[in-house]
Image 1 (cartoon, rainbow, N blue to C red):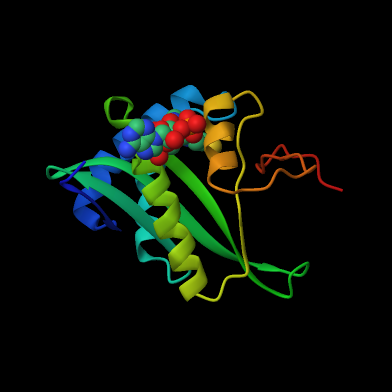
Image 2: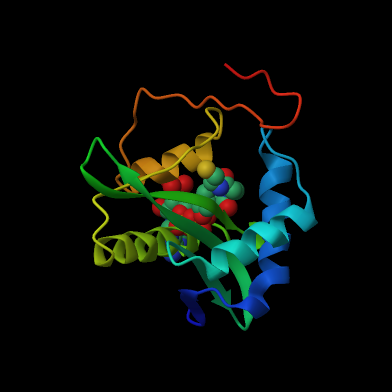
Length: 156
Ligand SMILES: CC(C)(COP(=O)(O)OP(=O)(O)OC[C@H]1O[C@@H](n2cnc3c(N)ncnc32)[C@H](O)[C@@H]1OP(=O)(O)O)[C@@H](O)C(=O)NCCC(=O)NCCS
């Protein structure tokens, strides 16, 4: 992949990145693809001072992406980062693009003085879990719960 570069995403990458997220959220059972929401989320990330989007560009085309958002960790007594939205378009997989995206995210996080990165993955996404094993990401015993917040939410 000689002509592949990883760089911070720009506004003009929006449509391509939204397309990648349609693929990701079609694949992940807990999410639903919605281009309007994905474009909105991406715009918010592009302008956020506490987040970054990395885009993988190959021959002028966006073929992969990942995002990192900073959060305060009381466990670490400092900032950690949530890595999300990692996807490489199917025809470009197994060529090292995913590894490069993760590496750029990790280097950025170190430069930003983040002390840890974390991510969520589907328990049955064996390809991604193997990929994270290889990249040196530890397993945890944590699971994810969520509550959607709307006017009908049951509040305690
Ligand atoms: C997970 C994902 C992002 C990995 O991206 P990728 O670009 O295929 O990853 P890489 O090419 O860096 O690594 C994949 C494999 O190819 C191998 N590889 C890396 N560079 C290689 C190269 N130059 N030539 C051949 N194989 C290579 C790696 O050893 C790795 O092996 P593994 O399957 O044992 O981990 C990609 O499969 C994907 O988009 N999946 C669907 C979305 C998804 O599951 N996202 C994660 C949500 S939590």
